[in-house]
Image (cartoon, rainbow, N blue to C red; front, side):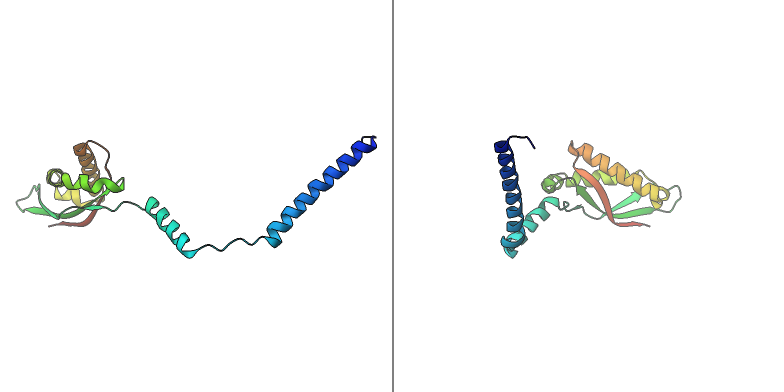
Length: 156
């Protein structure tokens, strides 16, 4: 070692103490210490609070609308649609409620300019969804709508 008997003894004692402390901590954590069991009530409360933070906001349901569609033929075409707006955050319901009539009017205006053939295709429905989302966000002055869901979509 170092050649100095006193320094060697000190190093040996410190090494022994460090090893004893490590073994003591291991024995205590593995054999002596018993982790307390979780309380069912506390865990349920914590789960519920975490769930509220991560839950998606509920969609805002609009009224059923019946819209006259542009038709190149003499036959009249109608769209019966029920729409739900998916907001970005939970506190948008009051804002949507105050703009409900203007949102319905913009949906009627957008869908009324489209033909039945356009709306029958998947791309037409996606286009209608994007136009409604853009129109409502522009109407409200801020990004409130994350998505648009059609719960009923019937063309006659």
